[in-house]
Length: 339
Image 1: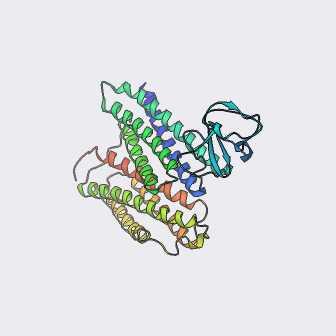
Image 2: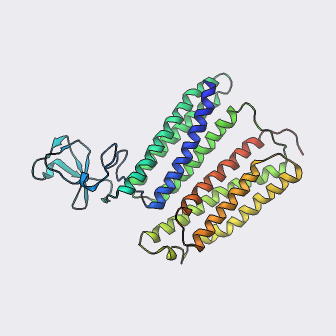
Image 3: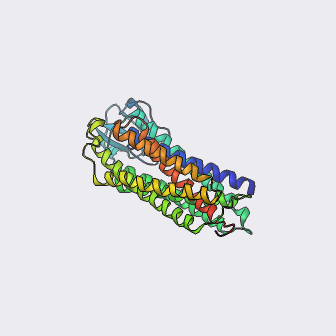
């Protein structure tokens, strides 16, 4: 079972990143309410492709919980029944969680695919937990960590439901992102512990302290970026052209922009110290590269009025940066000698 543990853990990690990408694409396309209910989508396990499917149809067989849109209102079937020739109010009740009742097939399917990826990631996290029992005698803590990841995935699913019910509450979206980073951390830990030939870096106390500082800076930047994104979303929802999205930016934007210089300098310090002392930390090169692309995408958003896809790239790169930094911390924990 051990040979499957590492593979399923890696697949689960990739799927979590795909969920993050899909979630960022959901926000990019404004598809967050593409499925106004949860876990189904308009009361279906496979959502409709045309609005006609969501209109009341005489003679159609409706199942309990199925949704229709009538007079710009979401209505839910109270029971299983076959619709009569005329609409019967007692057969239906108003959807109680919110009053959002817009069907856009693109938004619906973008959100639906996001949910499917989340479910698939959950399945592989569960498989990782099952295969973790092969470490019962050697590293029993891996079992508990794998189980905790499953709990976090369940929490993420529940949180996704509350995000929809709250019509995309900014605070809940931010919590959603932080929980995703926590899941990534634990998955990387499992993968690292399962490696037979772990990388062993030379140890330098200063390098280690700055390394921990940089990951804290990254998390802080993610939180600031989420705040900026919320401000941009509020402006974009008014229908304003992209050129106006950051015309009057919030304070968090200026902090986020200026703070990126600190992040860059701190990681450049690690890059040069790694080369000077020959610590053999090759992933520092990836960290610097990711930061460079991250800053470049931010510049493009500000000066080129948010080219399509740059927001998604910006968010996904931030989570990739966090993942690489955290894995370097795991590698750095195996000290070969003290400098």
